[in-house]
Length: 127
Ligand code: SF4
Ligand code: SF4
Image (cartoon, rainbow, N blue to C red; front, side, top):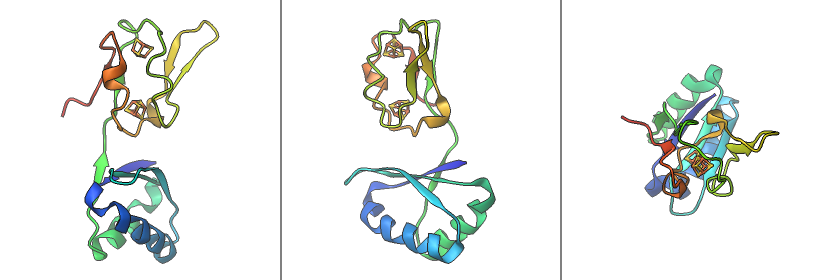
């Protein structure tokens, strides 16, 4: 699955374009986050990416691919849990030893967790 970001200024319009693109291409586009006034995050299966991007382009919708996500440093993490409830996609959980587990495949780079970590264990992409 590949994640893409649609800028906030096209947010409302994007919903209609996404719906039409699903109809036009037959490719499922999963909306991961669509908060009014914010960027819209979508996920597309690798096999359908070309079709979807071509369809978006024809409709004038430019998207940017999310290639990197937040990283978690287990050496710095003290499993305090302050990041857990903030994450809209439930990327954080605890294992049976109450140690924090981070599933980066669920990160949509909303960045809500970054300032919450008192240990600097969560870092944004470096590029
Ligand atoms: S940036 Fe942090 S809060 Fe946002 S989705 Fe990724 S892990 Fe969750
Ligand atoms: S807020 Fe930071 S230290 Fe606390 S559990 Fe999350 S990553 Fe670990």
